View 1: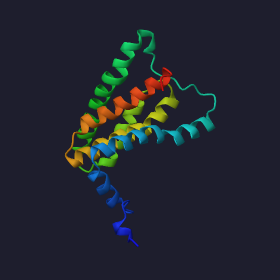
View 2: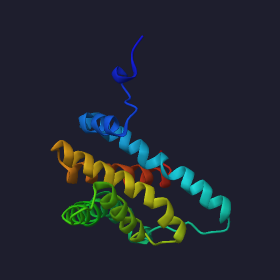
View 3: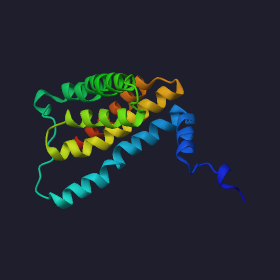
Length: 170
């Protein structure tokens, strides 16, 4: 019989943070990608329950062609948004005395979500994804990894999967 302290999933906040900081990138990428798709689901369901007639909205880049849409969604947007909403925002906020990583991630997620104002629904469902991306950025930075490239990779993979799904290729 194993004790609580030797279990793989620690039960304390500090233990969970230590677990995630020690998680190698090859494990973190699929877990974070899964979180990017699943964390917004309860928020979307609640929003749809209370506002059933609301339009979701989405970026209108399809009129410019598939190639440009792929480049924008899978290269340009992840690079730009990671630069602004994770790298710049979190690093600047963390320089403010008393600003914790959690506060920086929440503010960064709020700004990330606000930049996706295709509809209020879209903003609401993008906020949890911003929390995941910001959280991964902070974790990778704490590990001494490559937080910028980790988040760009996750964001690009998520957008590529969504693109393939919307093109009925998945």
